[in-house]
Image 1 (cartoon, rainbow, N blue to C red):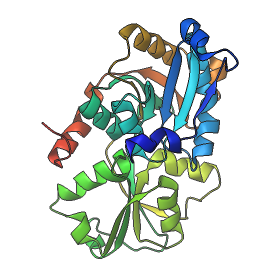
Image 2 (cartoon, rainbow, N blue to C red; image 1 turned 60 degrees about the vertical axis):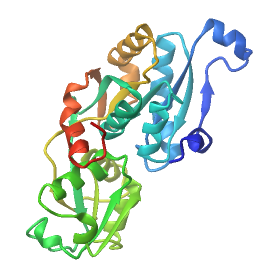
Image 3 (tube, one colour; image 1 turned 180 degrees about the vertical axis):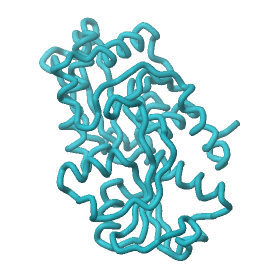
Image 4 (cartoon, one colour; image 1 turned 180 degrees about the horizontal axis):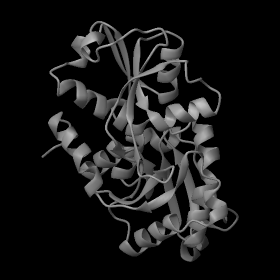
Length: 289
């Protein structure tokens, strides 16, 4: 995504003390620019779900909020690396790219059912008969997510290439860049044979009634991966980063209840849990040494 278009394409809004002149607000309350990846089916859904959480976080530290939703995972990574946003909630690979390109640093990991992990998955159309994956998938069509996605590009690409498979040559029809929701729907509607994604997102679509358990089938699942991360820009003062971390970790019970299932909270994190994914990026030649 063109970094200059990120904010213009995002659903940006400032909440808090909008009536006060900007110069007065800057002197009394800092403005925290938050960037979100496309976690829900639409940008509007992502904004609606997460705005109350980030309003509570910024209020806890006495700041105003500007919330921006990127339309792809690569876009949110670029925005954080170039300090167009102060803080971003993003996938692990997006964070690693932002760290590699702009020295961004993590402050919290999101919990799913109380655990800081999730899984990459590859799903297939419901009638697909595939007993031997990946060998038996040669010639099938594959839809991956954008190259900024952990589970939708990095992990499955590394899995395949570590087994000597070049996805673009191996699959009969190969494409990148779909949204997670579109990829799930493409398999359920039989438009493609296989698609990448992640278990938390698929389970949310099932919970919301968008698809059912039998709309498609899980063909492959990765080992546990470190969950989505909240990271801050390189130039953020340490005092501000620490205050934000504390606000996430100590969210009041009534605010935590507003988290979209299956998210249950946040806990502090460091870069260490993400080192294996970082190595995958180096193995694929995406990250500089």
